[in-house]
Image: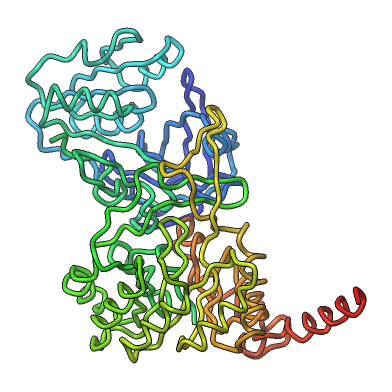
Length: 219
Length: 292
């Protein structure tokens, strides 16, 4: 892991979300599903964000401005600088035969980078409103649904599922596909195993998501 | 000496960070393994953070057989933080560690705000641990008592070699939408910048009360924060919450500490130790006279 102060290239609105583009500096973009800790201006703790895209010379993050930290990140202007630490954690395994990407809400964040790495496999995306669903533009040709339709209504048995989304969605996918790779989310203070804050109970066992995940096998 | 605060660094997942310190203090080890508290375990507040990890650890047996040999390979002094639910727990763990050359010192965590407090007080725990080991014993105290200096004197009399000041203090954060506790277990321990004035006061009080070596910690973000703790009486300084946001903090804080001492005319930051004291004493005396 490496920590650098990077410059903001642009902050772009994508439906209800914000695409934060920063210059890459000397930081490795890592594997799809890995994440970075982004300094949130004016806040004590950085915020964990998975990488959405890795265009040449840039790191791009998709952010949902839901709290003071994410709002501060979405308010950054071109030229502003922020500390970025990463890449962190374990990403998706790419040795899958018939990949299907499944994303729910802001959980689509790591999927564009993952899609590139896998040669643009099919994808199913679910959102809670049409405005949120505008972010589907980030993943060309994805099948999109809006609540009350759920992604699990559209998934057929068979493919190797790689998913990221809210906990109820991941739990439902685990029931359908015990072999799925699921990217989980939890509040974390550090991102590198120090704080023990990101422990989540999965299958009755507490796991530190930052070092054991965030991508874990469903079963 | 620059250390980490117990529970604020895992030297096995971030060995480079541990090596940038002068010593590594382990997460608190208890006699039996503990999963820790139910999530949510951390929450940021306006002026700090709350944690309620609840002493998650592998237990003393696995710590000694599995973790300690790996930690020893880091090549830096190891301080083992020991916790428990009765004085015998501390004594048993100290006995396990007593013969192990890898262990430079033992910190007695008698002040975790996230688990039920031991039945015995700090003095009884220190006394029990003292009988069990010849290792240097540092008592980690809570500042959330009426007179921390008195607790420090009692720990000294019971055989402690030094003090670690301060542990987090109990706090509560509410989810601002639902107005329910934000942390899974309800309360948590407050750390970060909000804790610094509390730490300074506790370090000053215990330095005055005992003159013992003190590891000062609580809200240190910069070298100047560290120098303030030294001026209040700390001999060493530990970094806590700052490590979460800045794993490069040890080198930065160390450089800033040297600079801050030099800017004030001291050759070494050691020379600043306790300088806040005389003034604190004389002002305290003045205030007392005034009231009288």
